[in-house]
Length: 203
Length: 196
Image 1 (cartoon, chains in turn brown, orange):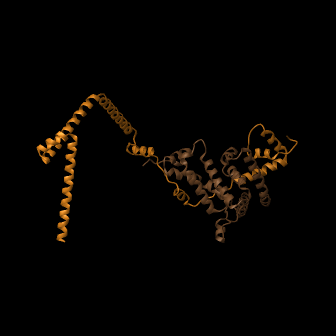
Image 2 (cartoon, each protein chain N blue to C red; image 1 turned 90 degrees about the vertical axis):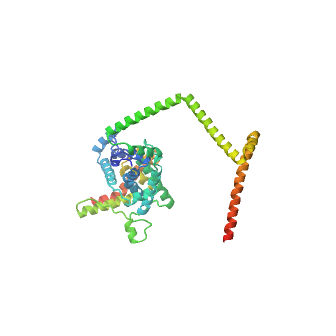
Image 3 (cartoon, rainbow over the protein chains, first blue to last red; image 1 turned 30 degrees about the horizontal axis):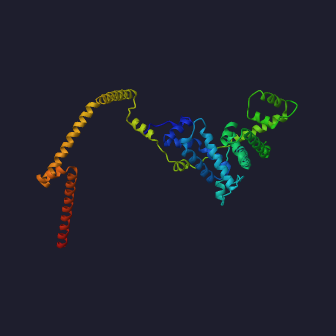
């Protein structure tokens, strides 16, 4: 039995090295670190919780089953986001779901299913009015994100939700740097236009 | 720079908080131009809203479901290292003692192997003598068996015919033994059928 490891404080590359040595806890630590960002990216792409879980699961299975191929000069997160984006885009192309509703999964048939697959973005504001405004803005931003083209969506999510640089996004999505800048610029522009009425209403 | 409004790319530079010589005049421009300042602030507001969107959580069984499809393979060298580590003491002095003992043992074994290797002639001579001894024992035992079974005169005849005679005699002996066994089994079978 190997000695207990303090995985929480290790950098990704060290955790990956332990996973390559067959440490089950290291695999689980990698899942713990990236479960939410990967799931969120995919969820915002496909807008169906169950489907997003399946695609996120596929993403992790692909990465973890080929963990021996990981090269430490690259970020593990970039590899994960690349696979996540690819599985989501592949799915959207297959199903031709370029845009979907924020009000629930298109696969949802009952009111319960629609509610279960709807976004619930609550703010941390003090007053009910503030909370209402925050919810309105949260719903509006999610609606605006979901109305973007998938390639814009993944770029803007990686840039502003995951905090990646333009260069990292280009490497992650296999796109030229100029294309990434253009996509992000257009996405910001579309989001500004989509959020104009919300901002005007809250001012 | 001050005579025109900022281009979209220039607004992006400011929103992304880029630094460099090219950004300084842009910053100077938005200090004077309320239109461009509003544009930049609006873009920053959108970015701020985006950066505040939350992460979503997968179900609590997500990790288990992933791991159900990930066979964890422990490479042989890790298994070997773990097996060794299991036997090693935790404290540093004890580890040093074990390392010293292992080094001494390795040294003694190496010296012993080198000594044995230098004694090749002695080993060859000893193994040759042992081989001759074993051959004599086998030959004597075989001769005793054959002379007992076939008698001294027949054995002398077999000895004169050489290897072929000995082989034929042994073959005959085996065939006779086989026939005896088969005969005895047949008799036993007949006897048991009669009893039945």
